[in-house]
Image (cartoon, rainbow, N blue to C red; front, side, top):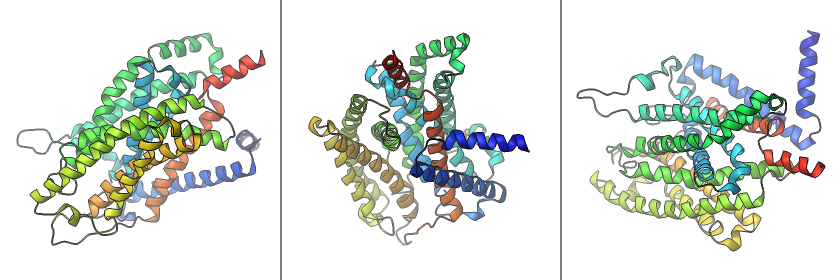
Length: 416
């Protein structure tokens, strides 16, 4: 008993020692949210989906919003890795470990969210084994492709994260571990290339293909939705990869990543947002025609709680990254750069909210009314709890692992 008490005390001191009062409060809140996540997760997994508000109209829980959002924003990991290792944009090197960790967590907790949506978690292997392929079987399961691509890319992210773990100040002292970490860094370009190939398919299939292929659902049907989801992930994901270390640095009063690195990645994000915006306008234009094929008018399908305001808000948010991240005068100013990146992330988040909330609420037939969804407390705490766990994991890596190795090198050089 004394040993356990000493261990708990040591852990408490290691985590909270030297932290400010505000930081300790934030840690307490995050830990409580994480515990509530665990409690309600057990309840859902063992006692079923009856604790959610899911029905025949809303076939996914509230956490699917986080699911699609994490996948889309986590797409910045493959874009950043590809730019660094294939195009040799060396200015991105200070941020790459952070990017890999964020991508790893986004995909890890995408699996967690999908586990809750299965209803019967023991059948999670059905996604791999039952693709609905066979004579006369239609449609083929898009989710099968998602399962395989997510799994394979998640394995690549694990490989990319291993060198960061091996470079821990205690592990790196071993010459064999140091050699493994060194050679893994040298071969990382292969992971970046393979990850980009896999991510292209699952970004499109999970982000757009699953919904755009449903021609009986007029509000979703879009033959090019697959490709638009890929562009969205590249645009919003790169902004997301900038915001996380930037916010962490502000909280901890330390510049984790040079401003030049931020500007390089946000410039890429702003450039891609131009193409994404044009693609989105084209998507809206074609939607008017597709809606009429179902005997509907496009604007008539925007109603209920999740009405046209969601589309307007999304289009307004595009102004941030297009203006502030593409015009050098604004991008060079820190506040405008952050506003532009935040608006970019917001535009992607609102687009996913629109697809899910509006998409499920819009009736299949014009004589039916719009529906709404009211998540239960279990759904809220599972969704919010996942984000709390992600923040704690990121903070742990910042504290105990070389997430930003260039800082250690700078401090070492300054000491000498």
